[in-house]
Length: 140
Image (tube, rainbow, N blue to C red; front, side):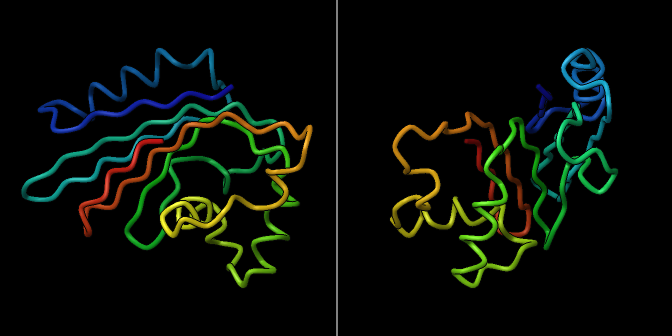
C-alpha cells in the first residue's frame, strides 16, 4: 500500500511532511523516511511510509537518493524481474533501472515489451523525483 507526502516552498515543510507521514502510518507501518532538499531559492520535502511486501530490507526504504536526485515511490512493480532483465539487455545499469521508463518516455520510445503483452497487469504507480541541481521536480 505505502504512502507518499511532500511539500514545496513551505516555511515549515519538514514539520508538515513529518506530520503527514505520521498520519499515513496505516498505509505503511514498516518504515518511514523524510528528506529535505534546500538551496537558496527552493525548498522541497519528501516523505514516505512503507509497507514491506517483496523486499523487506532497509536498503529498500525510501526516499531513494542517487546522483543528486531523490525519489519517493508509491506502488509495487510485480514484474520487476522481467523489467530489470529487459533493461539490462538495453545496457541499463541495475542501479538506474527506476529511471529508465522516464528516459524512454522522454525519448519517445515505446514501453518495454513486458508491459505491452496482452492481458498483462500494468501497475498503477506514483513517482516523485526531485533534483535541485538541475531544477527537476517530476510528479507522475
